Length: 115
Length: 112
Image 1 (cartoon, rainbow over the protein chains, first blue to last red):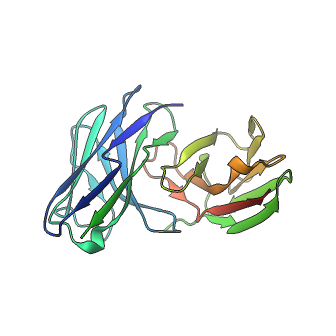
Image 2 (cartoon, one colour):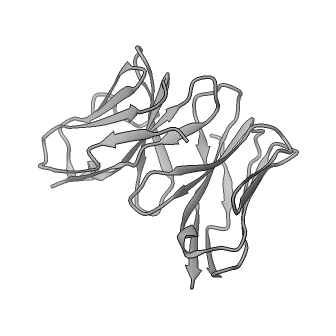
């Protein structure tokens, strides 16, 4: 299957700092990428949908100024958690959709811990 | 919003047993996807279904897209320890729609 990478896999930061997470589709072009957040023992919660070259569409309740998304190319999307606080600690997972197909592949996730 | 009801929520089985889980909805879906997630990892796509009635296998896994387009099941035959994990169904309601709707997950535990 298609490969999606995420970096970093784990990050610990101090409260108030910003953290950038990268998501890359390694062997295909992804016109659409998605960012999810997952709490322990729960399903995936969609945060935003990112289309290459355009502004991201955020789900209700997700602060766009808090979670900045950039999708500059067909293989790269970034999520920046600005002024992170302990309640932002979570598992963040990106996903990329293959052009002309209905399938969607996930990255390995990034564990964020804000102290 | 659209809901996917996935059951069972958890399963405790003996190694070698067959497993069956399903997802249902009141909405009609055009695509069904089944994923497995290991602890601390992202979901891995197991099987993708695109047509009503479609039955697709991937090794010991078999999944079907329900005729009514409102449900799907996943079967695992002769379970082994590495099958342990959380299985999610996901569906797309409209052809070409962006978002996937996810089930709540089925946590599979296997006793050796």
